[in-house]
Length: 192
Ligand code: GLN
Image (cartoon, rainbow, N blue to C red; front, side):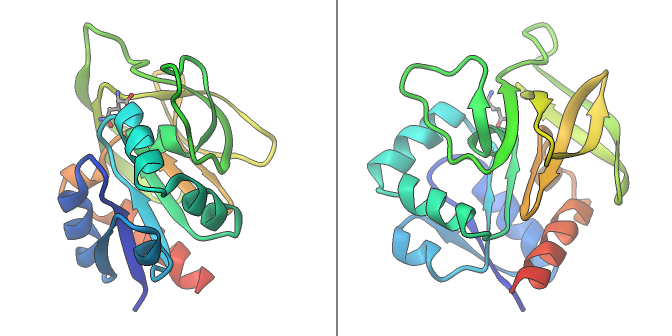
């Protein structure tokens, strides 16, 4: 059984732990480099990407995270987690760092102020229709040659994969539908 961590600096950690357990993984929170070293894969939750970035620096996690992602550890980011996996943020706050790993440019809070939160059915390649919960969600402005687009909403990219890195603008951990987590658990199984 793969052991999958959830980066527990800020955000909806608990919901991911529950979804991963439902998808037959052993799930545990990860806050320190020693804990990161013990997991086969990692989820980066939704929350606030600037805060996650700052805390990752404070906890000495940014470089260890970059190293493991570079070394091919499977990683799945939702919403703020998607932002953390972007090689580039279009509109970063000053000092905002990312882990990187997916060749893409993201726009934070892209779906706008009027409609900060909404739900929509999203057709995810290889998974099928998924209920997407979007909360002040980013979208992917553009992707590199190696990045696979898995879903779009309203003409904007909202799910991508590049090698062992998976990311969605929306929050499957909030719906009780564990197919996205099951896809990620399969990626971890294939990599172990
Ligand atoms: N808007 C948040 C950010 O920029 C992401 C929101 C979320 O994760 N639900 O990090």
